[in-house]
Image 1 (cartoon, rainbow, N blue to C red):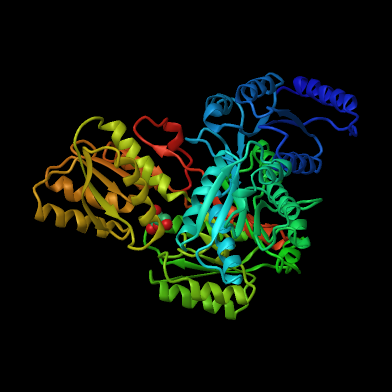
Image 2: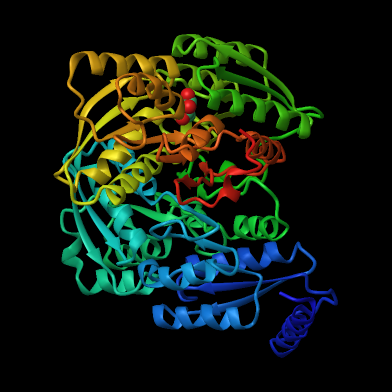
Length: 609
Ligand code: AHR
């Protein structure tokens, strides 16, 4: 936006501030952020608005222009268009119906950065998504209910679930019901017309039969939980446990209700308002390394942890120099080398004392190294787990020692409480992107795929396979005809191809390699047999390393899905934030591209790996 328009904007905001009687700060307007909210009826949205405004206050020169769609998608679409007509620099949107609003979000993203809150839209036409993991929240609520029932010695119990028919509510409910039904708990679900205290109270007072045989009430926000409490008190019913969601502070917020014993537990559902403003300012200041998704952590709150949860800083006594122990996998690919270099450089840039040690790709060796870092009393421990299994004992040891553990690049198959944060890619989406490209490239024909899988038991190998199969499952003509492990290495990729050719007549239409190195290891082997890679057989791989992009531009590889190894800056920023007492997101998901023959040449230039 031009400076002239910015000044006009500043005057407009000034006028709006005076008309609304808001405090007026005499500063020039650097950035105007448009905020489109789904509604301002739900408490969650009111808290979101407060967080956005409170954080924006910390930045001179940032102005917010906030609109309220009152739950109407058509109005929200016109709100966004009106904000654009004001010449805003960035849009933050909490959509009322993300499908309905995807077109206007995509159109807006063509012109200015867009941060989507609360629910990620299909596709990736936005700058950054910030929201909770609704499936996890459902599981956490289910686990809390099971804990309460175990405390009461109740088996075969029944739960009354009070929902509001929102997208978040549906995904939370599905995971909740799945979690409790595995323990034989029956759930009776009702959808309330309004997610409010009064509606919940009135519903139960009008239909007390809903409570017959019920041992626990699970309400999809703390206000409905409070309404349930008021109804039980008026009906003179005791002995029914109540679990809510949101966990906000303040009058009748979930934290206060748990402290007072009005409800038995809640699960926090952070709004992301504070993070949205911080990242908005970084985006407008063109800070590099902005992630694609920030998945916020949710906590299970009971009377025994509600006080600790509200303590400001989770880390006390920031050390003058932060000591970090990093358990890295030994160099098995070009990707790994680029990742290691990025981590090392970022540690220097952030003045962090990094001890990075390498182990053979064995979980026993890696966990031994982590135990050594615990014994050395590191401030933070970072791991790139070679495989997903086998981590609980050493993560328990780190937790006992009070040392936060961050996962970088790969995930572990443990509960989210066992680690502080994950920074890396959405491996399933990488697999989906390969499959979507293949089906687009070879539409409506039989496709026999040879799959080169990565290290057995590693999260990238597991998840890329899941994502790829999820997309081709709907295509009966496309099948994985042969799958073998190439262990993410060029040599092993070549060996798999050699063996296939020795044992089969060539009958493969496409190769799906879980990484570039394995794909590149097959090219010469095929060429020696007269098979033209990229022509006689379509080749897809993941990483985006320079050798693969050279092969793609030569037509020998057809689709390279990026898996960004340059995780150093995000890791060191997260560690710095952590040591300043900030809570880290549960997952920080990197922004990644897809390269094909149609990718503009400019995107191949100035790459760092
Ligand atoms: O964990 C990421 C994977 O590990 C990369 O795709 C692969 O090249 C590396 O070995």
